[in-house]
Image: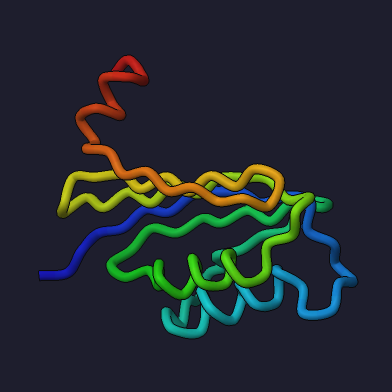
Length: 114
């Protein structure tokens, strides 16, 4: 059975003119395995926004890119909702350092007031 994934997030600042820029590497790591017809990454000035809903998302590839290409000045977060496992993984990026936490969706919904 396929897993329904929802992925939303942002990373900033991401310079457009960096050599081996995070933007280009993320674009390849995320879009190529999915062969998506819609853009999964968007630029908003110096911010990269990630938005995906579907059956498969290359989470490990995205995490590897972020680990390898993130700069000490970058911040952001990415939430990965796994509907089948009813869990949410949250990746936080604070001044280039990353942390990952997984929570059951019920806990997330309770915390947010739903």
